Amino acid sequence: MTMSFQIDHDLHTHTYLSSCSRDPEQTPRRLLDHARENGYTVQCVTDHLWDNLVPGASKWYAPQDVEHVKKNLPLPTDDQVRMVFGCETEFIGGKQLGLHPSHYDDFDFIVIPPNHFHMIGFVRPASYDTEEKIADLFVERLEEIAALDLPWEKVGIAHPNCGLIFREGDVSKVFRLVDEKRYRAVMHSFAEKGAGIELNVGCFPPEDTGHLEDHLRLFRMAKEEGCKFYLASDAHHPKELDAVPAMAPDIVKKLGLTGEDQYHIPQ
Ligand SMILES: [Zn+2]
Ligand SMILES: [Zn+2]
Image 1 (cartoon, helix red, strand yellow):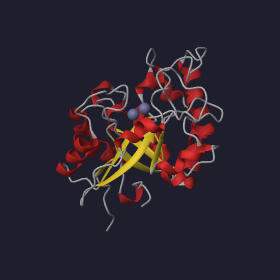
Image 2: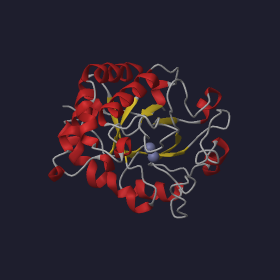
Image 3: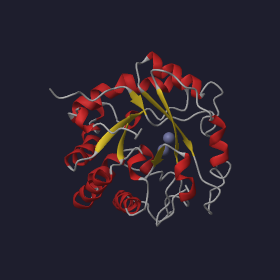
Image 4: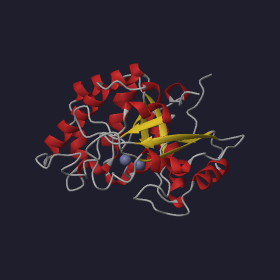
C-alpha cells in the first residue's frame, strides 16, 4: 500500500522578525501551537534574510541579517512537532545568493525564492517587462540557482508559481510561456540534488478563475521529473497559518501526490 502525502508540516512561515510581518502575535510559540493543534510533525521558521557577509543588500533587506533572524533562537521544543530553524534568503541572478556559505550550517532549511520579481531594480532588471521576458528570466534564475554549490538536501525552491513574478502582468500567461524543455531539465536537476519544491498553498488561484491548471502544470512537470514537494503557508500572521490545512488537501489531490512525492528536511 502506498503511503499518502501527509498534510503534517508547514516549511515556510515568517515571524514578527520579518519586516513584512512585524506582527507581535506571530512568534515561534504561536507557530508551534498551531502546528500542534493541526497534528503536524514539522514546523519550520523561515524569516526573510540577507546575510551581511554578502555585499549588495537592498535597503529593505539590510536590517534582516543572520543576527536578526537568530533572535528567534532557541526555538521552543515539543514532543510532537519538530521545530526547524530555517530562512528565506534571496537570489538576484548570477551567483548572487543572499546567504554566505559560512552560514549554511546555521540553518536546517534554506528556502530560495527564484521569482521575487516585484523587487524591480534589485531582483528583476526593469527591462524585463513582458510576459515573454519574465518567463525567460524565471527559467534562467532556476538554472542559475541549480548551478550553485549548496547543501542541496536542505534547500527548498520557494513558491515557483508566486504571483509576485509579474504583479502588473498576466501571471498565467507567464507560466504558459515557460520553456518546457529547459524547465523540465532544471526540475530534473533539483530532483537529482534532493532539493524540495514548495507548494505554497496561497499561490494557487481558485478553480473558477480558469487559471488553476496553468499553475498545476508547473508542478506536474516537476513531479514527472522526479521532484519531491513540501507544503507551505508563507504565513506572516497567525490567521494565515490555516491555509495549509484548508487548501493543501485539494492541491495534493489534484497533483496526485503520494508519500513517495513528499520532501523531508534531513534529521
Ligand atoms: Zn517569498
Ligand atoms: Zn516567504
